[in-house]
Image (cartoon, rainbow over all chains, first blue to last red):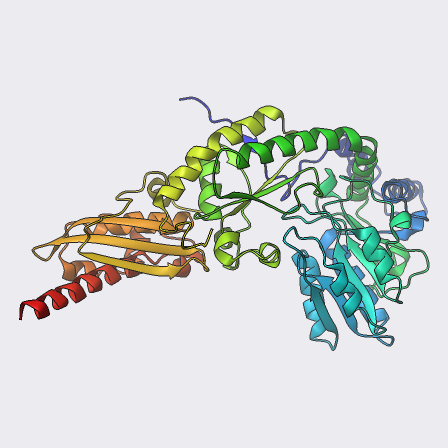
Amino acid sequence: MSKTKKVNMDYASGKPVDPRAIDAMLPFMKTSYGNPSSLHVSGQEAKLALDEARVKVADLVNAEKVESIIFTSGATESNNLAIKGVANRSKDKGTKIITSSVEHMSVVNPVKFLTTKGFEAVFLPVDKFGTLDLASLKKELNDKTTLVSIVYANGEIGTIEPIREISKIVHTTNAVLHVDATVAAGQIPIDVQALGIDLLTISSNDMYGPKGVGALYIKDGLRIEPLLHGGGQEKGLRSGTENIPGIVAFGKAAEIAKKEMQTNSEHLTKLRDRLIEGLLKPLPYTFLNGHPTNRVPDNVSVRYSFIEGESMLLSLEMNGVSVSSGSACASKTLEPSHVLLATGLKHEEAHGSIMFSLGRENILEDVEYVIGLMPSIINRLRAMSPLTPKELKL
Amino acid sequence: MYSDKVMEHFKNPKNTGEIHDADGVGTVGNPVCGDLMTMYIKVKENKITDIKFKTFGCGAAIATSSMTTEMAKGKTLEEALKITRADVATSLGGLPPVKMHCSNLAADALHEAIKDFYKKQEATNEVKK
């Protein structure tokens, strides 16, 4: 029996750790395992490594001060810290929070939680590509608005938001701008100063660092409330002994991401564009989700009418290809993705979506393999489907 | 996530397609929820002699459709009406809890097809009278 080829195109849900980042973290588990708050040698080694990692992460996003970077346990914590931290700290000034309808659940749910605590939340609409409606932002902003939280690049459909324009609009008021750059950071250049970003969420695993580590950039001088109270680490904003091995590896991953960004971006963009072309061309009633050009290099989200995402996912899995489905059946809730619905898709259209997220390890051969598999998978499932173009009004 | 039996039926589903001169047709589900299935039956001397399905849905939806057609084929209408969603899930070696409700509609589609057959028969009998 021939061995099935294995192709991973689900890097968005988890990435391998860069071997150079693993090498960097190992000494901090084996020998330099001290606590950076201790004054002895082992502790001071850890402190030095913590500072160095902070420099590297600050450098990746061009933070004005190294101290503007706070290490957290990951993007979910960073998003929670930014949103609750700003909202609670400034609730005397106002209680209106503005976000978009295409955010990650780690933004959606903290915002929804705050609405149970007396805050008002607005989820701004997007266009069919998932790009924020700037006119709505202008309309909703008022002197009671303290926080605007917008995703930099969408994790499901890849669309990059116009952060510079958003920042200009937000800063016509006293509101602060939080940007969730979980997907974008390390993949596309980000300059928090040039863009006018007040808080930025950064994830380690999304740039090939280990899971369980992340960072929040907080603009110099901006005061927010911590989530965790304790020993006062991370300027009192994130108590708890620092995850030194994880942070060191994250720092290394950030350094590598910056240095190799152009090479990786060119490689992934080439694969992405070939995959989009190869998936859309041979089959009718096949569409791209997200923006056709203004998208991150690693994301290809497509939808096939008349069939459901999970059955595509299983069919690909049977051929050794791992992907992710934004559809109800593969997720815990039975609702289709709120991001796809926000782009104006009907439920039955959203259900037919499938997401390929590319990684540095993918090669053109992987892309051609997937392109070759799709027509028979889609045609088999479509032959079983009771839906027709007429019913879907296509 | 799925049992071997579910995967087997997903890979090689039995009785897919339409019966153009079906004696009964039943459709359940809603594409909005991500599951829609239609069952077609041929009935002779109170027995289901042929059955086919068309399904829009996840792996579980396709596997339960296939299993239901296998269970119903050759049965009397009374026997077929007794096939429950739970029977189908058990025959497949179980389904993940989240799939038990939405994606396990095939037995309902079968029952609808049988009801449709009865309704058509009544109509024919009326005409005869």
